[in-house]
Amino acid sequence: MVEIQPQKAACLERSETGRNPAILYSFRRCPFAIRARLALAAAAVQVELREVCLAAKPPELLAASAKGTVPVLVLPDGRVIDESQEIVRWSLEQAGRSWPDDGLAVQLIASCDGEFKALLDHCRYPERHPNGDASAARQQALTLLRQWNQGLLDGPETSQRSELQWLILPFLRQFRGLDAERFALEPGLEALRGWLEPWLESPALRAVMASPWGERRAWHSPSWLYHLTLAQEWRQAKRQGFYPWSTRGMTLQQVGFVHASWRHQVAATYRRFFADAAEVVLLALDPQAIANAGVPIRQEPAPDTGEWFPHLYGPLPMGAVVLADPYPDDACGAA
Ligand SMILES: N[C@@H](CCC(=O)N[C@@H](CS)C(=O)NCC(=O)O)C(=O)O
Image (cartoon, rainbow, N blue to C red):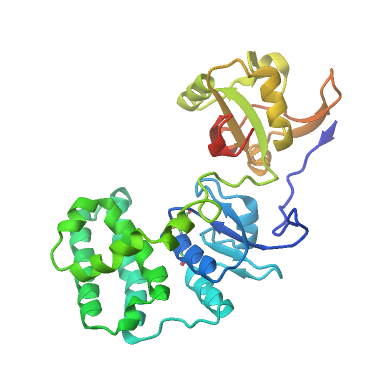
């Protein structure tokens, strides 16, 4: 029996090719991350993309940047760039291009990351502003957008440049997405729509919303453990806030520990014990959260094969479940 101490995860790992590409922690729909991916793709920078589940940030992301936002770019020499504008700036340098710095560009970028983003968040998450008025926030955002629209009409041709599109349009896309039909009819946004619409259909955007730049499946930290369970049992555990099982058909009380697997053991465990089940869920578990809940993890050999598996000596802490995905399923990257 070997007691497992959750390790502080390494920030950089060797890639399979032996080269050490830059790592980009990203979230597919995040406008800051879209902006970074557009710039990196245009500069043809090779990255290992790590799609993050924002509710379950992998320890590697937090080790690289404690503020826990995406995008974060970890360069091969270990340097970390954790602000989207700085990632764009760095990408532009790689490509020998310059930061958009005409008056309109400077104004749009400041307005976008400042006032507009705050209003956009208010519209998207009204529940986070209990005393706020989401429809007033929408009107304020529209007032700001009409100013942008006027700026485009009056501004120099350079405002059409792709660098400025990367910086601004992902945010406008998100605002439009709140109610595309209404957005299409808003007066005073004609120039802005004329700027946005072709970009929404552009190959550049399409490329960074699709794999490998835009992944739909979350990247899994190598430090995580796994537990397979029946979907109905997981649903019930969520309802009651307690998971009583050790493995399929056996409780923790009967067995004395909760069975778990390392990532490479999941597929074989599934084939042995779950292949005939209709709906199976794979839980990814954060070992640090398990330890914090006071549950020891011990590495022990299976009695029949001698293969070593991690076992949890206590109930599976609900808060340690970082991802719960159907299994097998392409979307969770398992199988
Ligand atoms: N100033 C940062 C902001 C990045 C940011 O706020 N990203 C959001 C996602 S769109 C995030 O990571 N939020 C953290 C969370 O939701 O926990 C940048 O420009 O990179």
